[in-house]
Image 1 (cartoon, rainbow, N blue to C red):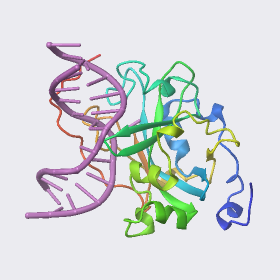
Image 2 (cartoon, rainbow, N blue to C red; image 1 turned 30 degrees about the vertical axis):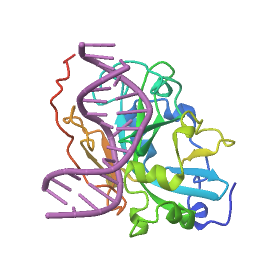
Image 3 (cartoon, chains in turn yellow, purple, cyan; image 1 turned 90 degrees about the horizontal axis):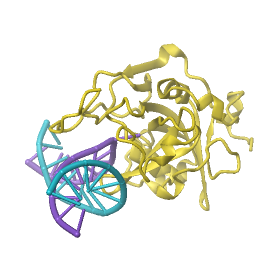
Image 4 (cartoon, chains in turn blue, red, brown; image 1 turned 135 degrees about the horizontal axis):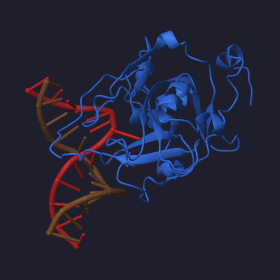
Length: 222
DNA sequence: TACCCGATTAACT
DNA sequence: GTTAATCGGGTAG
């Protein structure tokens, strides 16, 4: 639990786990709540902690960019469950991305963890991503973030609000509202008008914006 | 069962 | 700035 880690001592509530109730809200609100939160992951080699600095909200049937837009499937079923669980998916043949499930049981919604700053376990993080040219780059991007934390498909469905889980979500230190920036989601080709990406202004770990790919597929309007 | 393509990254011009 | 790598899930047939 608590320790002699300076990062923990400074923030009074830094060691507390976020509760399911706090996360059982609209993904857009949950996203802002997650900025500044700390995700910690255990492994036989040690523990890595990452302070979240960039997130994106994904909803359900009303969000064409969401994996849940076309209903429940074996892959996305965690997003339909209770808030506070980890949704990990595999993409582009070689990467994993992690989300925190929001909203309540039966209503899909989640927050994609896009980037963070490694605040503990830096050596293990570096060994997991040896190609990184700087510490700020270690978790700069959703797949890099899962990389430093060692998250894979096996972690899909883990309860982040349970202290006994191998992966947990701590409240961390609240980010002042004036430090939060907003914009369209990265790499999304639809619903580009909704500003559902949030990041901490000034962090070197925030990833660059990139427009979504080809939009040949027409998304039916509601 | 086949085909298409993605909530990406790294490498290259 | 562009593009290859790489494969599981989802949709079409």
